Length: 446
Figure 1 (cartoon, rainbow, N blue to C red):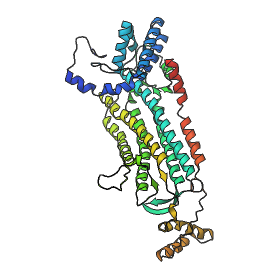
Figure 2 (spheres, one colour):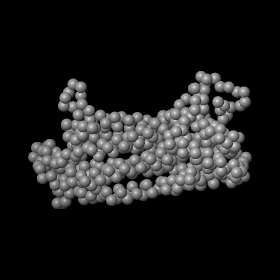
Figure 3 (cartoon, helix red, strand yellow):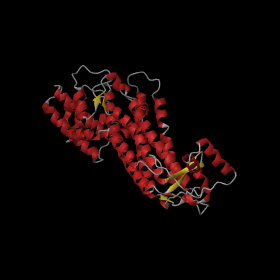
Figure 4 (cartoon, rainbow, N blue to C red):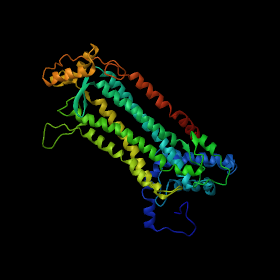
C-alpha cells in the first residue's frame, strides 16, 4: 500500500520498511481515537476557513464518528501493509467517500498530526493516572484516621529513633502523593497545548484558524510558535515520564516499608496469603512477592526519564525519526504506573496493622527524647537535659516504661493534620481542569 509520503512509482525495500516502521502499528492503536478527534477538529476548521465545502464536511464527520465508534467497540485494526494509524483512517475514508477522504490532510503534516494525537493521548492518560492516585490517596487518608492511635517505632539509619504511628505513616504517603500530583499537573499543562496547524514545523500558507481547533479540542492554548510546537515532541513525553517516575518513587518507598514491616524482625504488619508466596523448601515462609515486584517495577520506571533524555539528546530543532521511539518508553510506562497504583491500593486495603507494638521493652529508648523535653519544660537548658538523659542511658538507668507522648503540633502524632492534607489535595486536583477538556471532547464527537 502506498504511504502518505510516497511518490508515484516509488517502492520501499521490505527490510527497510520493517526497520523504520518497527512497533509503531502496535502503539498507534492506542492513538486511533485521538487521531479521529484531531481530524474532526481539523476538517471543521477547514470548512470554517473555506478550504472544505459544507456539503463535504457532513459526510466526512459522519464517517469519522463511525470510525470512532468502531475504535471504542474494539473493532478497529491497522491492516497489514498500512504504515500507521493516520494512513489507516485516511484509507477508510477514501474507501467510503472517494477523493473526498483525501481532503482531510490539507494544511496538515504527519508531524503535527502525530503531535496532536500524542498530546490528546497524554492528556487523557494523565487524567486516568490522577484518578488512580486519588483513589489511593483517599484510602491512605482513611487508614491514617483509623490508625491514628496505633503507635509504631520511628527509625533513622534503621535504628529506633522516636515514636511514630500508623496514622503518621499512612498520612505521610497521602501527602507525598499530593506533591507528586503537582508534578503531574505540570506535565498536563504542557500536554494541554495545541500543536495542530504547525505542519512540519514551519506552518502553512493556508489561512488556518489554530485558535478554533484549540477550542474544539479543549486545549488550554496553542503552541504559538510553530517551531516550538515541534520542539515539544519529546519534551512533553519527558514531563509525563518524570511525573510517572516521581509517583513510582513514592510507591517504591511504600513497598519497601511493607517488605520491612512484614518481616519477622520488625513484625509491624501482616499481609494476607493473597499478597505472599511460599518457599519450595521452607514451609514457614510467607514472602512479600507482590510488594517486592511493585518495588522493582517502580524502580524500573524511575529510569525512563534518563532513557528519554539520552534518546533525544543532541537533536537540533525540527522533526527527527528518533521521536518515533518515544512511544516505546511512554506507553508501557503509563500502563505500568496504573497497574502499580491499582496493586498498591489492593495491598494497603488488605494489610493488617498490629496493635500495641511499643509495649515491648526493646522500645524503651524511643522515649528518651520525651524525657529530655520534660526536663526542658521544667527549666533545664536543652543541652544539659540531653546530657542528663544520655548519662542515664549509658549507665543503664534510663526508665522508658512510662510511654508518655505529648506531641500536639501540626503534622505530629497527636495532630495528623489530615484536614490540611485534604485541602492541599483538593486545590491540586482543581488545577487540572479536566471538566473543560471532557466537555469539549464530548461536544466534538456528539
